[in-house]
Image: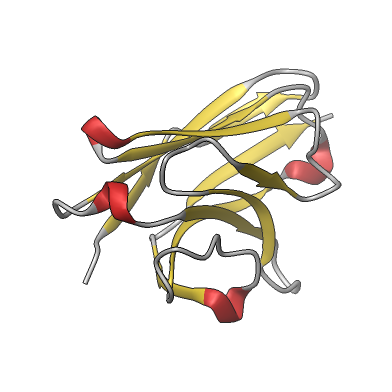
Length: 125
């Protein structure tokens, strides 16, 4: 079982940037795809970004495309989400995720095998 720990959330103003990180346990981090999701109260958890195991291919929700960048450092067992031009509607708890099938980039909650505890990102207007 992979353990995921997110960090880097906080309170920022609209237009600011923020980077959140997710540290994973285990020696096989480089063997599986990763993803970021987010959730606000009363809404379903939604896909934000995904990255395949080498980092060469990335995927984004339309709402964040052009503003967010997902990346990974397999030597550090860490995946990052760089968030630029933040908007109030980006306010959410952000979760990193490991897929059920390690080669498949998780883009739906059903495809996720493990979640981190989440980190709160709040964007004020």
